Length: 297
Length: 297
Image (cartoon, rainbow over all chains, first blue to last red; front, top):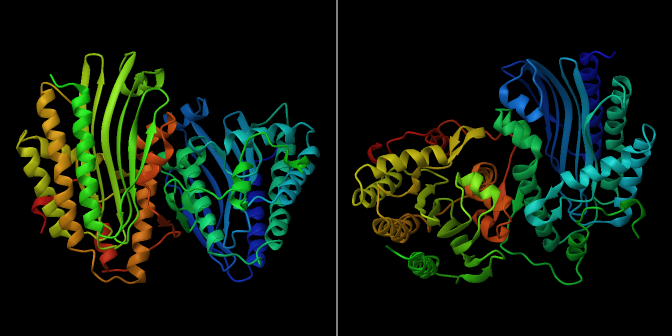
């Protein structure tokens, strides 16, 4: 049996590794760290980078514990007196519209005899590049297959359903994988930790590729505006539909850490229409559930 | 007894009056109108202005009817088979940070034997001017007092509670009045229509004053950035807490009309701090419930 402190410690190291890597990737800025304590127990380390290439990025670690309250038990469908939760979550908004937004989250939850892992990784390109989307999904399948040959297919479908902007009838991006309440008999506590660390450790090489391929590409005003509009959709998803954000804001979480996921700048234009045959239209046409990204042509 | 069609017709005229007035106020742009039909019954006229002085403003009229569904009855606490709802709602985001954002909404609802009026008007200054906030609240009290001497006090308190950004522990702005389910014995159906029209007709003269006092004032980069940050808060309120927005997005309302309330541009900066003794700090210090704006010094 792994102690929860050991899981938290692994996740802190993961945060360190990723932050170091992202500073190198951006090449112009360092992370700023805020350590914070949760009044009810535990705390976290929120780290933010605001660079020339990563316009706004947050990498948050937290390990919180304390008494469960009625709302928490209701949301989780549990009846426990205390809980423990630790995780790392990341959102990066790049400066260049040719680089996608990326989100990753891995977490562990324990309450009494109950424990589970959750997390996922998904990509939101401003402009979808099918070759890169396929590469991204192949990497995820490769990681998943080492643990369970059904994981990729299942978790890809969950991501399609989860990262869906219902009021726009659009997916947030090209999806990825998402899983929750992963525990026995599907995976042991030991293997579960290996799995979330494998997901966590794939983040940096994947994003480095997507980033380095694109961050020096030239872009014009129109592409910048499209990026701002797509960020507006990202804000809509996070504030209207994302369960983690809602749960955090409604249960007095640390607002600045929760809303690190928002971009620096976003835009809304009433009833914006894309041009026929444009790159913007192609991207919109691909924001659907159920696309087989691995085999897309 | 007033027919619901008569109420809708009065509200359409109100929309016309206000749009004409706002085109004069902006002085550079005309409204663009989209008429739309609701698949289940009824429809609306969404009007948007994007001018040099009113950066983005929406004035929406709708009159919708049809079969009630389970979710609607649950939210409304009713058991009816059909409903009718008509209203006008407005949000204006000015270009100049010295001009406040304004929101107004008046509406009528009917289902079987049940009917009620709702609505309100509230102001969100980027920089609070106490004299103007006091003027605004005095105008509202003046209108309310003609109908019921308790209305202003009650509806001002409801607005304080409603326009509250819980996760920021800030009010959205200086409040105003907000009322819902206003019916007999407090007001007759006839007087209720007079009341919402009185509220609606006070919108233009009030905003003209707040606008004309300030729209030509010079502003710098810092003030523009503060405006973008306060608009970020406006987005947070509307997407996380506003019941009308949530209801609309969850029940397949017309997304572009619902989200007309969002600003063109908004910004989020991690853990932004205002300077000691600055105008920004003064504004933040006044974003509280329970302020007696009429008598503030």
